[in-house]
Image (tube, rainbow, N blue to C red; front, side):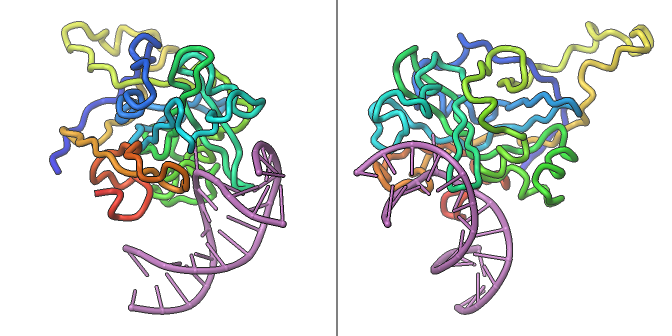
Length: 234
DNA sequence: GTATGGATGTTCT
DNA sequence: GAACATCCATACT
């Protein structure tokens, strides 16, 4: 695959940019960025795999109506729904519909961008491919737990959604020597290798039993950070 | 590479 | 008591 190196600049997504539909949002979020602000620094990762849990889906936690656990999925689109499952793992979802209507997108895998040493510490492994491949792993790497349930991810704070900003044209860039010494460069992240062309594919969802045949999983074809068996990654 | 079983805590039947 | 939007170690092809 052809790759090109570009500097990483992230701008926050506005809620108006998010499609007002769960399935459309699941597709839209592929290639967008999850940003976690922590005292020791920023962690970020590019979304490479999602699953839609749309309104009326019997596999979705919101299917039974609002409860104390799932109420965040009834918030206006762009809020975090974080829950705990299998006795060990937190899962990060993004609410997707209008207030009072249940809908969510599960973030299943990320490609690590910034803060990799912190992710390694949180996960207890140095293996890059194991840091954020799978919903439980990425939540651990990003230190995501119940305290982030209900957070607005379209607002500044501990957890938000971003997208890659276009590199500033050289003619408009502030020369480094004119910056105050105390101000860091706007984007301290190193250049990131990324595919020039991203192909988004669709499949059945992973790990569910109800409505198991619906094609509501989206992933970046061939990306090494996508979870699941090989036939659901290619 | 794929397959299987155990561990864990919350929610639901 | 069972199920669960999972992970890990282990066994095997």
